[in-house]
Length: 314
Image 1 (cartoon, rainbow, N blue to C red):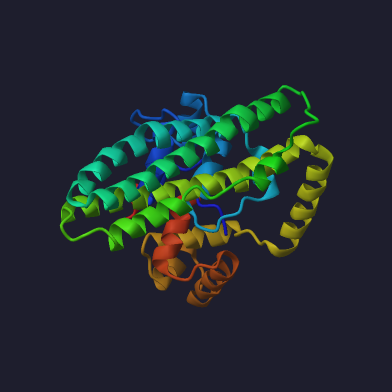
Image 2 (tube, helix red, strand yellow):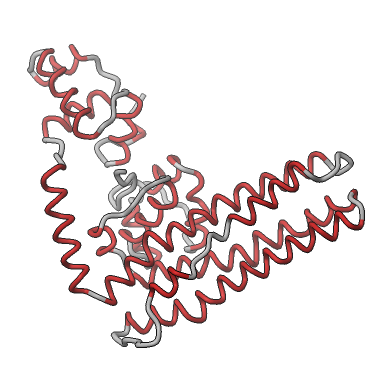
């Protein structure tokens, strides 16, 4: 899957394209007005590497997105660790502290046994989550810091983290099912829905958090552990991409911009002094190369790749 975000995009366009990315900005302390700043300019203001920021956003926003070795090579490990650490603080000090009192309020309508069972389940989940994050904070992150500083370790490697890495969102899904299906009707219905909404958002966030760890952090650390092997992987990937990937030509980009602005084939032909048949041929090539057929989809592609400003579209 092709990356959606790049440093040359407007920061406002990134936020408009996926509001689920707002927590990333909050955790990185990027809370001021962005105006017409690009992602690169905004990241530079906050001392954050733009390529790393875009990589995290792509993993977070696009289900199934797998970064290439080249994208991993551009990422800064200390910025990835900074984001993950900030996420840990958010989950433990904000998300769960908001959820817990609401859950307690909901359980007031349950029997003592029902309340105790759900409360025990939630407490065990919170304990497991804290244990999971403590391992990363006390073992994984210090190990990465040593690698960044040029120190190696013989008693730990990132595969030890991967082998013990669990999906911290699964048990949360079980809690959602319990609240949705098993609590009595006497529970406050609106409060039940509010809690389910909180859990759904938290579950999605945690799932993306896991993806950042597995698809960015782990391969990034492997690169530092074995630079020679990573260079070999990078060379093979680059060779493979050069065989199958075709870039849009300058003319095709011009046609794409016209399509995004809502122009008809005849209008495009007249503006560019070419035949309608040539316009149609260009549009077929554009679709073949980027795999997008609809005008709406082509418009989004043009915006996300910096070919057109969203404010110029009627």
